[in-house]
Image (cartoon, rainbow, N blue to C red; front, side, top):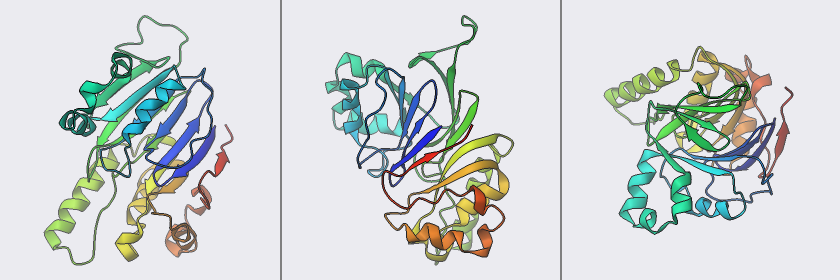
Length: 256
């Protein structure tokens, strides 16, 4: 597998049978294999996770599918964007709700594997975010890939005890849903705005789930945050699993 960090929470994952693009909103997109199915995921409507410009990728990638959180549909309807799209683009968009599952084959949605043999499917299940939209749990090519979106432990100095409890309970409940799944790649938030709590969510994922390779994201250009985290005692139990992102466009080769 080849993983490229684009920007913020945006990543490209290149697999044998397909390419996955997550939460792109800006940054340089390298040229991809136009013959492979390209699955474009957007976890929610926040500007730093979704850019409607991704829909124009259909011009370069004929085997494209868009798997978008259902809250994006509301936004596209409100500003009339959805109605103005071509039929071809509309047919490629698949909106998905929290706690929903969808199945795809060769870039097209299918309802069952029954009528196919020896085929490679993409299966996506969603979790409910603790902010907006969904997190994606994906099975493809025998690999398990998790992109958290904004499913994170959003706890802050100055919040009330009840606010802290509500957030903690919600976050722990969602993460528990993937705790028994061996995850090959995980893309997990760290956020400098939380000050000393910036890594709490990442740490909980790593201590609760079976993750082989963990990519920090959502760090708002502050690459030093990753170095700081990797130098902390809190990460020493799983430091070898943290992928040290140092620049936009950085590519990682993940051995099979």
